Length: 84
Image (cartoon, rainbow, N blue to C red; front, side, top):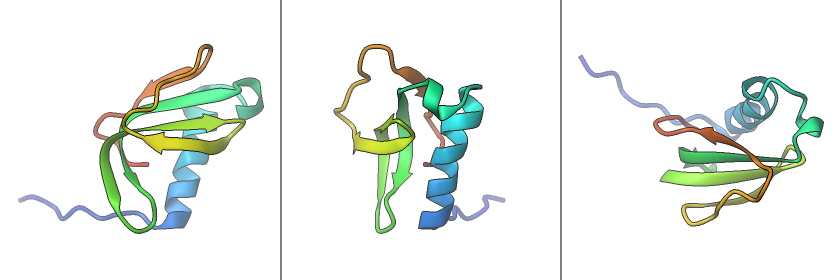
């Protein structure tokens, strides 16, 4: 039986970004100036963008899109199949 897919609300998205920035890295967000989330399903509050990238700088979303690349020194996290 396949379970229906649910899309998280904007508050859940903000919590997920914060969680990824702090827990998945294993460091405080302030210690890592840039985090690059690669290949995630991104829900922006209105629509879903599949297999896209998210760049976080100083713990805040700086850019979202499939064509953005990680800057030098950024912590890169493979998020394929995950939701942000």
